[in-house]
Amino acid sequence: MAADPPAAAHPADAAATARDLLRRLDLAVTRRLDGFLQGDYQGLVPGHGSESGEARLYRPGDDVRRIDWNVTARTHVPHVRETIAERELESWMLVDLSPSLEFGTARCEKRDLAIAAAAAVGFLTARLGNRIGAVVLHGQTIRRVPARTGRPHLSALLHSLLTIPRAGDSPRDGRDGEATDLARGITQLARVAQRRGLAVVISDFLAPDGWERQLRALAGRHDALAVEVVDPRELALPNVGLLSLVDPETGRRLEVQTASAPLRARYAAAATAQRAAIARSIRTAGADHLVLRTDNDWLLDMVRFVSGRRRRRAGVPRRAS
Image 1 (tube, rainbow, N blue to C red):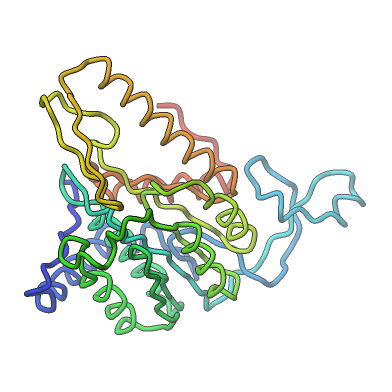
Image 2 (cartoon, rainbow, N blue to C red):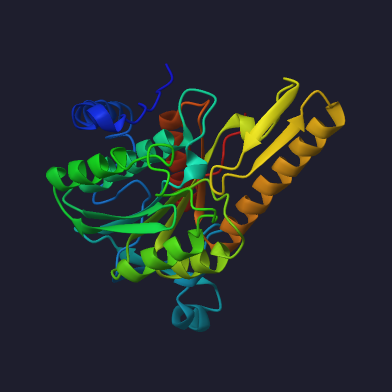
């Protein structure tokens, strides 16, 4: 059965509802992901430690940054240096809650799915005493939650995400006529994440170009994961006649005649090209890429992603379908 991320609460009853949502998220993650994804001292994405271990032969898919050039030069065969996982890791998240995520036509809004992804990262990395911190991008505002250990800290972090007002509830906070600066958010994430660890960027990546360079710098120091949140209606227009569209970031309006088949085809082609460009930028930056859709089982997508990544790191060939 698909797991629907719970919708965030309205400010009027946010406190009581947020506690209930956190309990439901904790239960969903614990039942579906905990134990299956976790290894000793590993989080959502199996990372590397900082203490050098043994060298082994290079396998396709290994991170070229971990090539041991001294051993490679002596043996004339590429080797990589394994590292020993630390018992206490530090994970940081950039959670994009900009107005563009206040959209959803399936089981939830993209904002709800972004918070659910943050909860999964938090529950899975904090369970062994690892520290978790967050940078929250809300319109042109950036908030920072210091990295700490413990479930009370994680609950407080997620509660703050759930209770951040939407642009519609607070017109002056978010919808200010300017597109969200994702590059600035990633730069802030890199600035606060001093220790090498896991860095997760959760966004729809529908931001002006320029964030690719910052993501590349982040991935050069940390095990970086880009979680892209997508709604199916962003990929194809429905045939519903004259449709009035509003840019949630700037408030600009546009009327579109969706009865036009050529227009719908051009829109679908442009959306496909846009998503391909985002995936290419993330891949070029050296970050892992996880796509979560509002019409899919997000927990199952996470399981498949981590399982596939672990198989690739272990050099296990993919089974033919």
